Length: 349
Image (cartoon, rainbow, N blue to C red; front, side):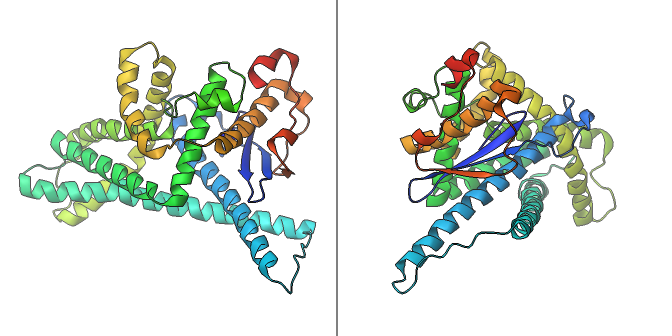
């Protein structure tokens, strides 16, 4: 999946080798409310939008795989032949509604799971260690331990799921996405040969963003709890710590905002500044887990996706109306023709 200011594209390869391309208009979650696009506020919005987009793209990909499996089962039945049934407009609309509801549900579940795993659990574990070692929430040590636990959970979780074949394949596409983006950013023609030579580690990756969030949270939580909240709030320890977890959740929004600005600046200066390379280094190391070397077919899919959104940005109104969620199927990569504006030939060829 690739996104540009105007549109986003999701591209999948079917079992028969055909390529499915879905394009839709990019609509920010918060509409025209420009305040949430301001620096230090936009980070949390971008994080939520990335979560929604990622789940939507994975759902679309899973639906394509399910369709392949269904066709394979039908073909295997000797006494039956596949009988595709065209959807009516009403059925399509109902399907779209159910997909939107499913996406909303998965986003909510993901948020609850993420907050429990990366906010609640580390805090409670740090509290347990503090009871033994003699530190509380007013000390920097508590929040440093909290951050180390968060990091350990994140790395362990990423490593564990990377062992699953399906997730490993997703991580290969993650690597293909980075290679395609590097190919474009370096002004090279968007070909498999050029993309293959690029690194799969990108300084502006969401993986780096997560690590910056952990580092910023240690500093911000230490300052806020030391300055404004005593280690005892109600006199009941478990209740005190549940309240503190509740305080931390809204603080994740400014933390995400600051982290986004840091990763954005670091990514821009990574080639020229030592501090930017230092700030980006932990995320680049973690990408050894969250990205894998893609094969040429996976690179093709990533390049088609970036070509689709860049083509629309470069041509503007000349590109015609945006797909509105429409799905096009092509027999091969050669069959996908994206006319290129003469001035953009070097970048979008």
